[in-house]
Length: 283
Image (cartoon, rainbow, N blue to C red; front, top):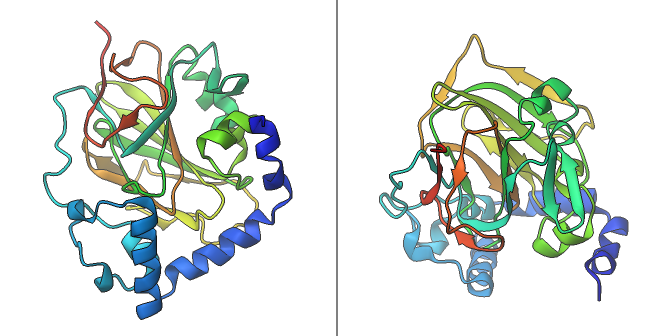
């Protein structure tokens, strides 16, 4: 069965309603019912609670608080590299931006301008640059961290669809990451220039949040929203938390030309861990 055929039901499912319902369930403090839900989830997906700062399943008052649980100190040391992997997950695709096109999967591409919500000047900064699409599965740690030091300059909320972002859907839905709801975070690095981290929403992803803003999409109003931070700087160090998914999704990163040479061990579908070497400045 082709991937395009497999994803056909997603076109007719009431994705907004399902996602709103899931968000309410995940945020509900349901006592023993919540604990049973978390126990089921841990068993089904093989979540490693030994790495969690709090391994007591019964102590989490809501599913969201379990899902965005912090890790123990020291379990994700940072590699000695210019850029470190910002998440636990798997590589969907990565590599060079073909002029201004980003590879989503075989036969599917989208443009940098489409990804960032239609801002052609921002998209043009990454012409012939580099990208990485990293997928977070349900079992993964769901906080995102900085690949290098950076100062936030803009954040853009882009409304969109809520298709799943699993590998099958990435292969079956054209332009997936540029048509789903997303939060575009634009950073400036003194050493590496402008780079972008895009938090991509998906079916059942209740919301996306950042430390400086809180929940970015509490109400889906269908309009692009933008915030700037020139007068109230947000400066984050390599490895610091920059966001979290309230249920899982994908992060897409964009770097300018001649900024990063990716880890030679990286390959599509390879598992990655927060803090491992993502790459270095090209020689």
